Amino acid sequence: MKTHTETLFRPFPFGSTTLWNRIVMAPMTRSHSPGGVTTPEVAAYYRKRAEGGAALIITEGTVVDCPGSNGYPAVPRIYGDDALDGWRQVIEEVHHAGSAIIPQLWHVGSVRQPGMEPDPSMGGFGPSPILHPTHGEGGTPPTALGSGDIEGVIEAFAQGAVNARSVGFDGVEIHGAHGYLVDQFLWEKTNERTDHYGGSPENRLRFATEIVAAVRAAVGADFPIVFRFSQWKMGDYRAKLVQDPQELEALLTPLTEAGVDVFHASTRKYWKPEFKDSNLNLAGWTRKITGCPTITVGSVGLDSDFLGAFMGNGAGPMSIENLIERLERDEFDLVAVGRALITDPQWPTKVQQGHFDDIKPFNPEALATL
Image 1 (cartoon, helix red, strand yellow):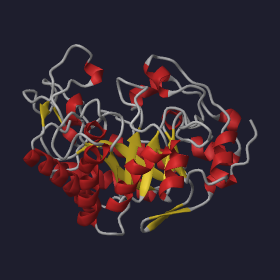
Image 2 (cartoon, rainbow, N blue to C red):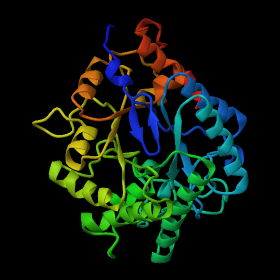
Image 3 (cartoon, helix red, strand yellow):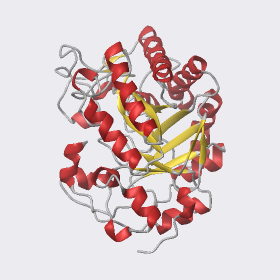
Image 4 (cartoon, rainbow, N blue to C red):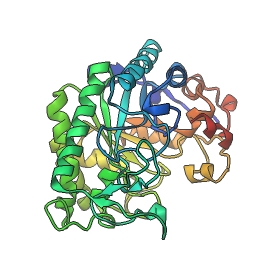
């Protein structure tokens, strides 16, 4: 596999810093932070990927300070002195290795079920009392958020961003993808509200834009805000928020106006066209519509998508020639890599040096390190 990779290793401005290449470590939930506090092992994990050449690290989902934000064991939080002290160590390690790092601010919404930590008595919250598709016929429907609850969630995201800036992060990512809370408001299947947060696409978008605007007001103009979104959802991989470029523009323009700097367009396979009559992927269309920098993601460097990994299947290395060609055409600006960096933290360095034959195939057992 012979590929010219210079384009992937051009610098890119990001807030007050400059990324030395275009490779981003994608956010991946790990459940390795007992009590919501990152450990020295977590710091070493991220530093290792920075040393391997990922210029920007996006952390695993990091929950904000409001009821029901958490839905998985031992995920980190972005509030509390103990958690913030843990993040300071992570940031120091990553910065020492020469990379930038941002947290992914997260609220799981109706994915949460009673019995989950930190308060097992608490169930989930969502825009409407609709059971999340991941729970099938079983499970407990969420409690619909009232207007006061919504204000509290928005404030929690803003405070999370303030906390992130205070401990030295280089920006923040708002998790608006994959069927979690922000996406639940966007998606008509989980949002059946009749107030100004539901009904029309414009109303369903309001919650997301208010979060972005609140974060922007809280951190100022020079702190990058990344917004991750997706068409697909957990439990419904064929879901569509938008059907065509016009609907995508209606989704993205208000988010841009609210303060998003970079869009992270999550797809399962980056090379798949998003709409007919064009080879542009979701990140490409996003960049064309908004003019904002975009991050593409989805099975970069691997020959199967992430679903196979969770079914116990491995994945072999795949040429990135198509990726490089798209990057050279300025279809997108940055490239997020997930599973390839789990098995082989040196993936960026090996790509830069042309040592493609030395890249390790993805082994599902590596998910244990997540």
